[in-house]
Image (cartoon, rainbow, N blue to C red; front, side, top):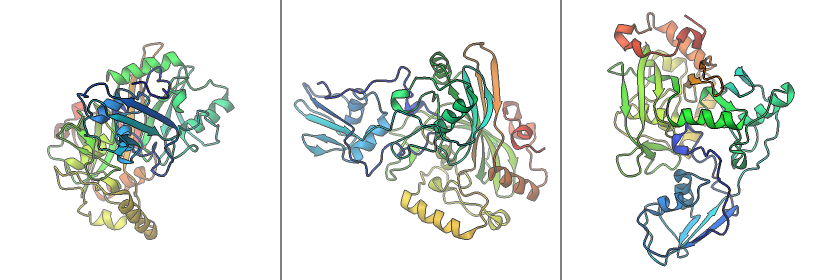
Length: 411
């Protein structure tokens, strides 16, 4: 049962299940790509005790279980020459074949893309990632990424290079990731030892990650926890959902109300686990989807929506609302025609990251300023709602971590 080719494993692999809010889950598998990158074949000597997706996860170490499920759904996995389902079980004598699309180029080409550097030394660099940028090259996008920008930055400044950890998967130095449209603080390693030590902090959850989000409605109670397992959405390929079956994996989010507006709220979110799209899914599940998060039932916001807050599609609690990619594209096209929208992408910002320096062991806290248009949206909401700030006695302020004045640049 030896595969015909075995890709090298990461020295310190990033497991997708342990990532921060990941870029769109289909970003690394192109539905139109020819599956000619790597081919695997096994002949079972006995019945398998697990599902086929779990079986393959234990044998193809270079990709996550989510990616394996995508390959199965795309028909890139066969059993005895026939397509199958992720939940299928294997029997003695079954012939399993899996084809992986080509990997992205291992070379990170420098590109002159400005980045906002929050901190840099010989071991690491901390960036305030802009919206619309994915972190590293993927099969669907080989340029315009954060790593392309950092390669240029290091080249021009002569300030080091990316670590080699993850290089074979075109993600050198990447310790964690953010959604394409999620802004905020992200740390990238410049040396291998640094990479391993920071990764351990993420793995053991000894660091602190807090986000700011503008959501529909106002949570009651004003602070609490969402402890709901997350897995792939049962019907919408591009989305995730709360799953109370074997597909769900433990996910925990702490939330705290920071400001209350007419029809909206500014919330601080503490990420205790790192499932794909965790914050977006959890907020939709409790009936407070993120403004502009069309996939998970949030609404784009313009002046009319500020004056008369809409009833968001994802505002019914305990439902797994999700919009398909074609439906989402239609909505975006309608938004573009309006021309007055303040927020059409998720109003979600990774505001704070606290960790220990991997060499000096000094505690370091980084706060990333909220960029436009989310900053403009918060300003508009504050102007319409005097006394929007929630007092510590009314919102559990003892657990607040983000300095709003520092993050928003306004009192």
